[in-house]
Length: 440
Image 1 (cartoon, rainbow, N blue to C red):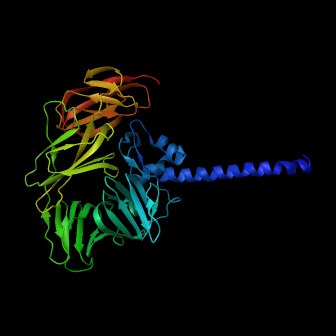
Image 2 (cartoon, rainbow, N blue to C red; image 1 turned 90 degrees about the horizontal axis):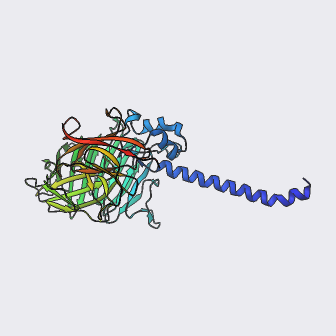
């Protein structure tokens, strides 16, 4: 090639190089966002496939296994949330937004409000705010998680490998704290009160002029100064109404509410509860995962019935119910699984099936399984590719419905399902069968 020809081609070569470099930058950004966005396991998925999708390398599945404490990879449970925050992407001791539902934003310094999104880093001085029916989950150092529900404001005061200190300005915050080392500190402040913890699951609420703390697991030390001698210890199953002046008193929390058993199949979206003695009001929450790190909806009311809005997509949700006593302490959570039927009849097709129950293909690729049980009674549901159920795709111990949706199921062939009354060790009730997924 002559010098003149090289000169003529130089701009186009430079343009191509710029395009390649730009593509590389875009790929790097996309990789970072994917790696920082949590993934909800679907039936039939494997760590190998998930690592290839989220980390662009199937061979990195052992990293995902170790980071998320997955035991036997072949028994990866649908509904489990996997996190991919990598030390090369998120500095050690840093925090990151792992999930956002609805409208939420961040205020940093004197700058403008910024909408929150998964993968966004969190640093001291940030103020996080949630709108109505919005939820934000924060991934914290050491694997701890904090959920900020609707209409709440939280200030991040300190975050590093040794100290996490958050200040609740208003609303609610619920934390699941991993076991802390003696030199580590996890504290949530509200008004002049500090709640220091070391490995626990607890709530702090500052709503309508009332400040409360409730402990579901572990224990919390409450004081104006975490080094003070006068401290209140709240243990699992207890809570207290907290004030700036008067000493607080620990009280037992109300037991978890349960869904009422119904003899006829429920065709609407109304859930009815068994009244809890002493309860004044109730709260209902729905989430996409069993740890409630991906909540999508909540309601509070007098009960004993809650009607869910038609805007919620049909399918399988994790359910949490709590009761409030006369002092407005929120009681222990009752967790389970519910299936929300479509607002309109499903247009899915029938599958070739056998057994006691029905299985119908839904337009979105999932399968709706129904059995002739009693709505509101507790069942354990299992799905497998083997007739002896030696390798489970789904094992859900608490289904308070007479059906659920599974999938989408990526592989064709035969699937086997069965239902027991109670938990997985409960009495077989004769509901079960199999169905064949056609090749796509």
